[in-house]
Image 1 (cartoon, rainbow, N blue to C red):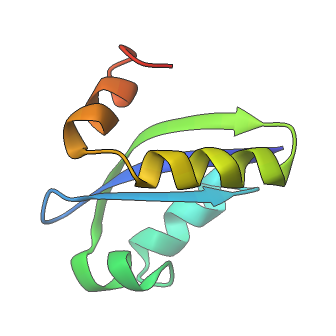
Image 2: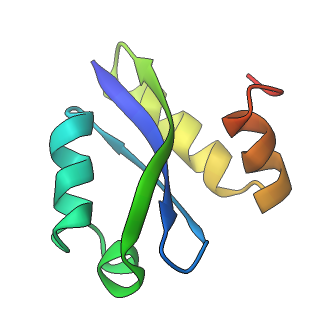
Length: 82
């Protein structure tokens, strides 16, 4: 199982990524061992996650969501978009 996730950073920005272990990856971000972006800006909380049966599906969705505006990402987080 693979997951697409969106984190809120301490500066209010969003970070979007994928992982096969959501809890471990979140802790890596919290401990400053995640991506460069979250290492620089810190992590507040996990806002959204969705599971996918295969990595390539999560990667495709990640690319799509990363191209979205903040407003559209908020709509996804709030459940307005699927």
